[in-house]
Image 1 (cartoon, helix red, strand yellow):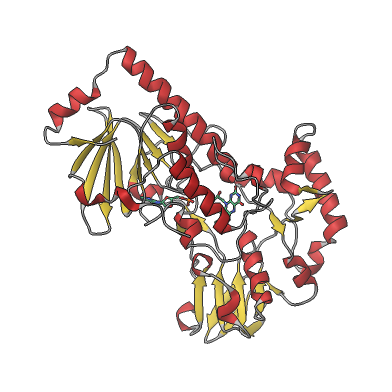
Image 2 (cartoon, rainbow, N blue to C red):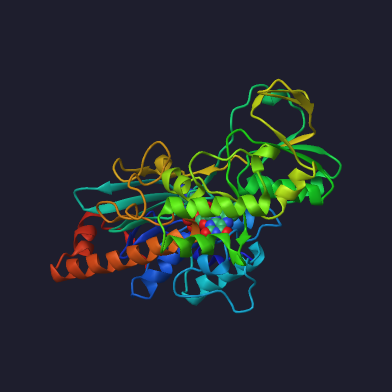
Length: 422
Ligand SMILES: Cc1cc2nc3c(=O)[nH]c(=O)nc-3n(C[C@H](O)[C@H](O)[C@H](O)COP(=O)(O)OP(=O)(O)OC[C@H]3O[C@@H](n4cnc5c(N)ncnc54)[C@H](O)[C@@H]3O)c2cc1C
């Protein structure tokens, strides 16, 4: 996988830069989608990315065997579909190739290795000041009318505090650093967390002749990836057009029971709420089984409850059992980093760094602030946000042009030595 053309290096950037169009923070799928939707409307943006490539989550922080969890038609970005020859579930290399082609199709050249550390609205100027630091420590302040937050729901790894972890003595890593089970042949590996990543890492470990165990602390919905010769996701979307959500949930659970059996028998208790209702309520995604359940049934993957504490090469569980392990993989998820850099109290919650207003209303804030990709609805949600954001920004630009508001004039007075970038 190649990284995108790093033409946009920050080396020549002056300390203050006036951006006539929006500044987009993050060059993942959401940032690229926003930039493309703006571009086709004639609005140039500046995309700032802390990493050295587009889609850094996919290129740097995912395991080798990863494929899109959802069928391709639910993962395409606006304005450009996947190539015909792509399979139903593209692998991560194909997805990154698609994103590279997408960036070049819309001439999106992110400014790489620029981490946004502070962004604040200046109420006097009516503009955003976005301060970034390059990998060499050089600071730049971008001044813009519109700020699009596209740093993602997965910006930082969540690492739980576990008593005794420092004395464990074996490998402990978050899934963002896990590449393949090759490293763990013949090893006893404890995977903590039973979302899609945790389940898939367990399967990968089995396939590499490691001995995985899985910590399942809470209840979890495991659904087959396909039902009735259709993808479970596609079938759910279709059923929701005709039936209320709890009826669709009951149908999904009935079919899952017929296909997978009673998952509680293997230590995977189902939550009281159905999978779609739960997703709507708190964003918890059901696990789409790609073969892990069969390995749990066969005993190749053992299930354990929550961890009480760790000791040297041992883990004590909440039911009192103590087992030996050589390594621990933390499939404990990610969180947003927005509260660390965006100084704004209304749109984003300080608690979880997500928009306070739920989908479909979380994309727009005040003073030209937008959020793309914080819907807990994956790439489909990001695409919806990106289209709405671009349309709204275009409308604002038109309205302000009609009112004859000259932002550039005001800026030049305030920052006489600034330069402009588009
Ligand atoms: C393992 C995995 C599999 C997934 N599979 C699917 C799937 O099949 N289908 C689906 O719809 N969704 C899937 N998702 C969910 C989601 O669609 C993806 O995570 C997707 O990458 C989100 O895109 P994004 O651009 O919003 O965020 P990201 O891909 O995380 O991109 C955000 C970018 O912002 C950058 N950034 C963060 N902070 C800063 C900062 N302060 N300054 C500058 N840059 C910054 C990051 O470096 C990153 O490049 C999956 C997620 C994971 C983790």
